[in-house]
Image 1 (cartoon, helix red, strand yellow):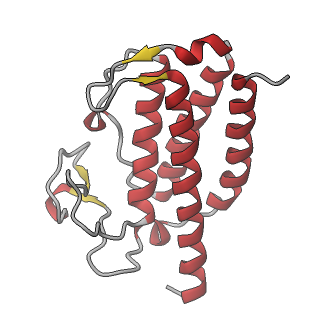
Image 2 (cartoon, rainbow, N blue to C red; image 1 turned 90 degrees about the horizontal axis):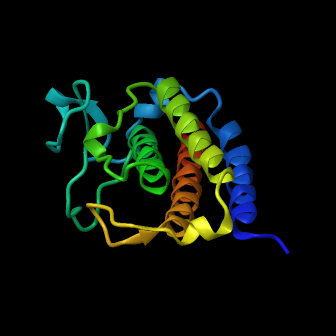
Length: 180
């Protein structure tokens, strides 16, 4: 019988192998492309349409609570979302459980976005390999959400990366097909 850690590792590895080739050759034009009016993106702090804590002079446009309906987001925004979440999910599942969005980098180019995503993704996957099935039940209390288990965090990691990774791939297809 396969245990939950082995199953999660297989899922994470399979998702990475599916997504990583879809991100090859991503250009800065694609990264910052705004396919709809009023997109949220990542921008130099002075050009941001939504105020937020700057990271190295850049802002990821986001508001809590988000407007209804929320604005469309760029590939840059989606990569930043994944880079930041992957760093935080790693910290919460395997680290001190203290990281906040403002502590996490904002990639300011396509190459940096792909690299930071892959680095965070692999760090999470590698740490997961060292767990035993009983480790999945360990609880932690994040400062920004309800209490979770490590197993919960792994499930959320898989869902977020699959979901937003597929969105990025679809936006790349749209960019190419529209000749943007």
